[in-house]
Amino acid sequence: MIPPDTEFLVIGAGLAGALTVHQLHLADRKVVWVDRQYQHSSTRTGAGIMNPITGRKFVYSWQFDRFLDQALATYRRLETSDWPILHRLHILKGLATPGDENNWCLRLGTPPYDRYMHEPVSPEGYPFLKDVRQLGRIDPVYRVDMHNVVQAVAERWGRPLYGEMRSPRTIWMNDELLTIPSHLSVILATGAPVQEIRELHLPLSPYQGQALLIRSPDLPRDAILHHKLKVVPYGEDLFWVGTHDRWDDLDEWPDAGGRQQLEETLKTFFEIRFDVVEHLSGIRPSSRTRRPFTGPLSGWENTFIINGLGTKGASLAPLVADHLCLYLLKGVAIPEEFKQPSA
Ligand SMILES: Cc1cc2nc3c(=O)[nH]c(=O)nc-3n(C[C@H](O)[C@H](O)[C@H](O)COP(=O)(O)OP(=O)(O)OC[C@H]3O[C@@H](n4cnc5c(N)ncnc54)[C@H](O)[C@@H]3O)c2cc1C
Image (cartoon, rainbow, N blue to C red; front, side, top):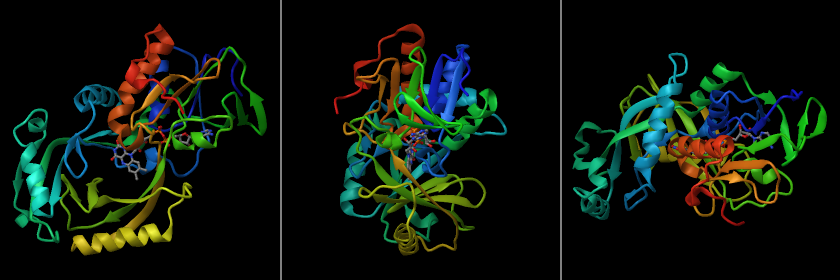
């Protein structure tokens, strides 16, 4: 049940919801945190890489350094020995064609690329990699254990209750459909499944991503190898391998075709021994503008949203959650670039 002195009802126990709940509790506000507790979510599935350089042409990620500073500070304060969050790594990017090598070298030595991109190195030390000419090094790079962010917040402030939002002001809890009292502020941090909530029309174009967790004795433990697939160290001999992406008929579940395609690509480009431990999937909450958005939910009283974290939740979420909480607690205006675009 929702206690009568509750001020904020936060829906969603992914990265966005967890960071919002954390900030509100730090400000000593009365918060109830709710999640429908499905097995799959973007936060559980994603590798959490904060990657400054993305895409085939090696483009600097939008306002990356601004987001990175806030993200590092937030995660350092949150992590504990039980719930480690930040892992310092580097990326070795497979340059497979002369065009790739050319695109890489064009970026070298120019700000902001010079902070992250380094001279390509020979792939000699990685003889198991197939069809690669050189390896471009991106350093520093961090992996954020996004699931541990949620766990750290839950341990500090209490686990989310079970509940499922049905419309922006109604929720299924304790076997009944509750209408949320009008004085209570509702924050929707429900990721891509927000599309299932009735009466909402948001500018999202979500897509599903599938990944494998594998064990292998043959892979480096300090580098993310990005060659056709991303292979990300998860501690000891465990690695995350992704992704297989789907844009149509979206549901939360991984499918046999996705697993087959991931295993085949891995066998083609990585000559390694491996066993599959788990097959993961989640739906990335991408916005049509590819930017995150937050603030009041258009058309609804006392209802707020944080969404659109897309493929970059690990770096974007701390700053966006901070702006939402500054707005809720101190009335500080949401910066234009984070306002909800029209549907
Ligand atoms: C394969 C894959 C790889 C990725 N890799 C990276 C990466 O390397 N780096 C990076 O930064 N990001 C990555 N991401 C993206 C990142 O995972 C997301 O940006 C981030 O997790 C989004 O968090 P969220 O809290 O907005 O949404 P979610 O994680 O989807 O959380 C939403 C929560 O809301 C709950 N919920 C939904 N609907 C309801 C409802 N009606 N009622 C109650 N609860 C509800 C869900 O159960 C869920 O717990 C990846 C994503 C995928 C799928």
